Length: 113
Image (tube, rainbow, N blue to C red; front, side, top):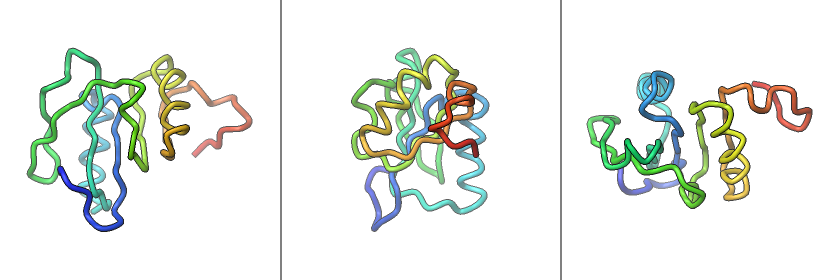
């Protein structure tokens, strides 16, 4: 999904090549979650490969400090150390972060959902 459509959010999935990343994609599709653009993020070794989302191939980008520019929602499933490093960067870039690791579980400033 290359172009952002209307006011639909730009959604990034961190750890898109893992089992939970694949489930994020399947669940968004199944539930009709509005997505203007999907940013598929993973390690350098997965960069350049593709994942399918709503009948289109989305090129996987390397997870970097600049990957969250323009992202509205970032779904993380890449392990605690990745979350600890990159979730604050995503928040600073303006994204709402949902992380499934234990990285922030005991942080009183981070809501548990």
